[in-house]
Picture: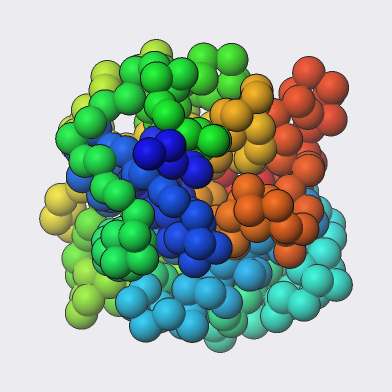
Length: 357
């Protein structure tokens, strides 16, 4: 029997969408060449925040965090999120804070003394201000994805695991949704996606309480269990032509990058020692924002998430399911359309090209 929607990819977006479509009463097939969350979903940093430069992403992130926080399966922890900036970015940061506030996000602009009060572990050298969102925090993306996948199957979605889709036209479906993360380019090569390396480290001892994405030293740190912390030290990223070219673990020199960044930004950062780490890839677009919409007749893409996938996934699934079911989506996804690149209508980046968007 012809299915209503075939979804390619059983990560965050494929599994979330399968649930949303099944709730709409639609017949769904969910394909994955491996297993749910076996790609970059399982390598996610686990951070959620609504600090963005464009109305559409703020709305999606705000709604996404509400859905994740309201779902016990996500293991949401409200740590707060803070984005410190240097003087050159103070005005841009203030505008983003006001954008969020205008759309209902609890967001504040802090001075350096207030920054230190929120996260006493921080050194504030070079920080002119910081955006602070008390509702930002952490979730478990692998656990959430597996829960969505199980719920989708319970609602009647047909899992097709271990089946790699190489020809979209071979799928007997009313619509095909490609949500294959870094592997999307194999199926939709016309979408301008660049694969950029991202490395995550675990270090200890480093006791922190807040998720901090520091634009000054380019280090992002989140709390973990006990005296463990996770860290990403941004540096010039390596690129890949195909997602399978990316290594599994960071190169040795990355340990020095993490150590230098932690020493500059945290009071006891010099005491933190490397525990382990892993490597993934950002599937980034030219404006570091996703593509969500039809790319040709019958083929819909959720692609190029550019590092924002976790917090956007539940809301995008809600909107795409409504659209495919013939309803008005609760958030207008038109700014994320594929054609914006040809039209020159790229989304604004307050801090320049990066995953901070």
